[in-house]
Amino acid sequence: MLQEWHKRVTEFPSRVAEFVKIVDASLSRERGKYLTWDQLAAACVIDEAVICDVKKVRASVELHGSQTRSQMLIDADEAASQKMQNVSIVTRVNQALYEKLITAAFSFL
Image 1 (cartoon, rainbow, N blue to C red):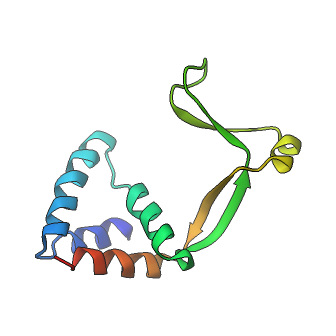
Image 2: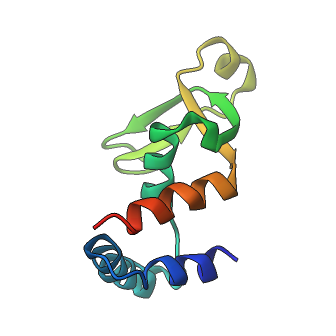
Image 3: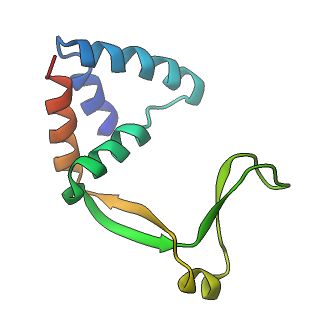
């Protein structure tokens, strides 16, 4: 469903849609599917009503660690995590509102 909607909005006759289409084509080749992380994050900032559910956790960024490099690590210790929550992770969004915001953005120029 999301993939079909994305295909429709990137066909709009606008510079925004053309730009996103080029960038997404490159990313889709690398990952094998379409993902909207950056657009979704922007929509959540523009209109908080996009956010339906949030999970609060304790997390940090491991810069030169043994597990990852420059990635966020979520603390698996529930007790410690509940005391020192410092990150909100969006776990569910209002798909209709998200599509409305992105459609409006793609139609702009």
